[in-house]
Image (cartoon, rainbow over all chains, first blue to last red; front, side):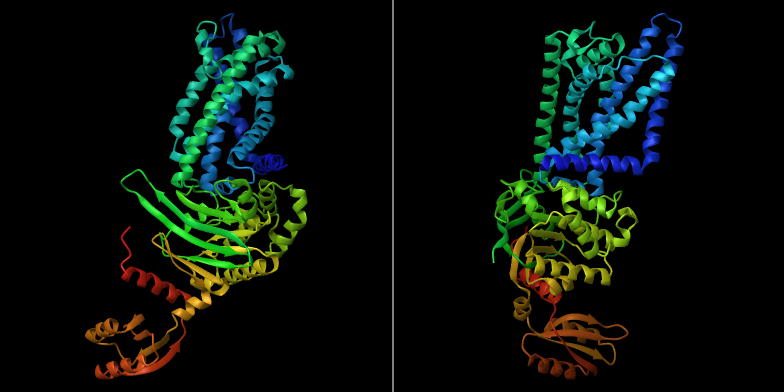
Length: 259
Length: 324
């Protein structure tokens, strides 16, 4: 029961804040839409005359959405820890009935749910209307693939969160990671198959297949799916382990809540 | 009475493996029983906040045990959190973007209970803290005193047996502080809870605490009933006002030979002097007569916790506690 109530508390708070501070929520959508427009029209100007551009549009939309997912997964999460420490509420979260690990997981769930409803949903709609390309939205195939792909990124989120607990100012590392993730989303797996061992690449490639070529999750070989599961859990596990170690360090040094 | 908090030989050393090692607290030992308010006192850097954070499970101790309502902080963290409500220094223990009701609902659910089950309790706390008019206003728009009430309400909402408060009256005006003190007393008396209260405001501790634990340089130097403590340090105190400023040499001699608690040699020269024995006043009179000092008035003064605290710390320094 207590795990459910913590989950509910985090989700409700997220919804209240997004509605109460709606200008901020709306600004976020507008800014990300402008970034998409710049990306799309920039690409169109560079290679608009080439016959392959038609296939690239779908790639741009899918890549952009995945980047959004990734961005909210790791950056939002780290910002959450930093902000709570600044607000002085971090220590209260730490004193929850379920322990801090579950509070963070609940926050991930809440953020994933709310962000996807207002940001990914509106961005997908706006991107499709702007480009005139309507993607295959096979939720049955996409949802598990997106969750598995992003799970690996959450490993990095936990790790960065742990680093934020101990070192506080880690925004530069976040920027570097941002570029790294963009690279991994765009990684050409057909040319460099070893890249699939890194996070995101394998999942991105499969999501691309579903959204642009109309593939279903059942069309993928079982080995590919198992590889994705293994890859994501490996990075998630690694991140959780790192977080636990850093959390203990923060507790030992009395750094929780300091900023 | 059963102990709701047991602190045994609690030790915390920061930077343990490094040269700039700091022993924050060492072998701290005390208990807080049901229906008891205990004041945790100490000068800055004495280890009060470290002790409170170890009790709340926010800092991992290096040695010793902390048990809250029988649950070990290291082994039963979740059970401990069900039994403890902590409000740390400052009023940012709550979300300023949420309303008082939303904060209480959030912290109730964070404590593992459904918001619906606590509606009545939330209503009761809102009434008790006189927040009815502001219950749906964002906390950021409330006064400091009201924010502190919301923080206290958010800590009380999960019905903790032990309430740990770090400087709860800091920054509050006199009326708000008094109101908070009344609330704490009533909570403890009516609801069988216990409060551990850290404060620099001695009058607050003296008003509402039965017992005081004084920390100095990370160690417990006093753990006694407040009344007993005041009695131990019971002295006859006198406030003397002088007709004119004292000569420099007279002022120096006065401070060297008597226990001068306060001294002013300005426009209205005065000295507050304490005596361990009532007959000490005769020696003072002889001294002042010898120095040709004219006294304009004499008033007797009682001892308060602040003076006891200052004397305790001073006594500790004089007894040559090892340097940390």
